Image (cartoon, rainbow, N blue to C red; front, side, top):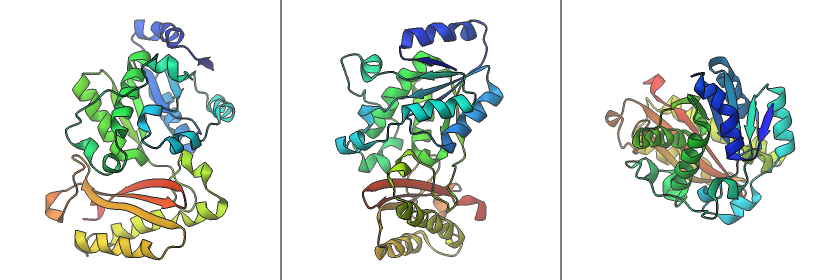
Length: 284
């Protein structure tokens, strides 16, 4: 496994694959890796001559500096996991290597995708995501790039970024990996105590119940029901629950507005913010 800290060295290494038109797979991460990340590596290795993983905690996508400072950093164990997963190349740049002296986001118009849910609660978040992903794509020049569906809104934003910027890369969404209690695997889970992690499985329980109830209840009834379920929970505080169209991410007020509804949720387990989502349309 080759580890690069400098973009020019990485580009030089990958040039032999590009020159021969061999497929390059890429999974951008912010480290604190878990089995969900490793599944992206596994998927990439099936379809590409070389698989690249980046580990970079991107400062421009954090609207909360405390959240940035608390983000788990576990580079040594991350590299060990990637080695075990037979990853080919790891890119671990410093902030100045990515941004030089201008650590700021470009502004993107993602045609409304950036304004819903996470975008409305995390100011400038998707500008930061778009900025760093575009930079990484320009360095790696991947044939295929792999992203987990836990960050479903991010996945749709990146698909839009590729289209708007005319980038020649195929974006592949991969299934959510979950803990035994259903909690979506996330780097932030490392900040949860064992008790909190167990209690946070409640989020997935609620999503599944919403899916079961979707054919029987109106959207308004479901929204109200979810709020009620969280109201008396001792550890979890609901930030939002939204049923939206998968393509536009616009909230839907009634079922006729979308044939691809998906439930999105964000909640705090004490101080740790968790997100999840679940497709609803298979039971319509």
